Image (cartoon, rainbow, N blue to C red; front, side, top):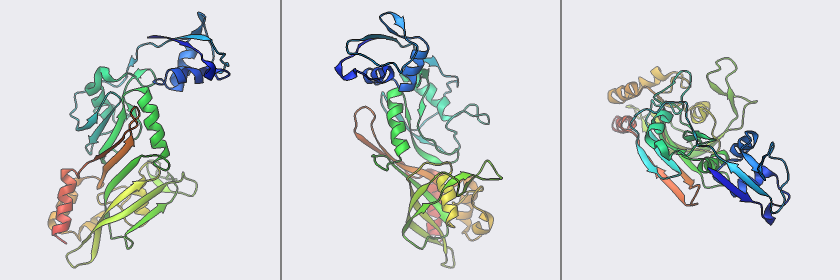
Length: 328
């Protein structure tokens, strides 16, 4: 694709890459800088070598945008639960057990592989590559809502919203978590920095030297054991930051580890012995942490409309919930 641009008075004195970004909003600054470096931006027929040069009113530029290159991950026909889709983005209700992005331990059968097959030509390219734009992730064993960009413009806008974490913008994210014990207060906030565990590097831990992390929680339901003693609770968690394993580590930090979390929830077997037979069987068959991304809201990157989606508990968590209620 070839695009001809004439700088206006509002472009006077601005850097070339900023001017190009104003005239080509569907391309990121990073993508435009790469095009300049590749010699695909010219002035009066002469390729330019850098994006820092100042622009004068009336200057004429030509930008050659090559077709998006095929993505390295292969497209795979994997069923998806699609909550919403348009030309800019797609919202998926991810099942537990699905990895979001290919990695050495999971080279295929991921959400990205499935999206490459489903979206096909509707992916206009992220950074010049025909691939879905991942702006946030869910752990492999966490189920629920996830939004993915289909083009550069949507990727930039959504990434900015998730970077802000709803502190000043419209982003909303809420998770449902089944935790051991019953929090005494109806709601609270965990403000504890998170970083890599000093010994077990695959784990996250609360560390003074870590990155700041804030989780707001609200107790929705409490479940007692057969003797009427507090046993577990259903809480809603809202993130003010988005760190790896944040909810799992923060809830364990305040003494309320997630049911089924073998990594951060010590003493799972002892606690499970207090469950009724059906609830214990449901927890054993769950095989994962009891965490579900239940609500997702954000501003549409093109229209500015606020979109909000909710996902009910998946069947395995709904069965655990029913068992906890009936056996209390």
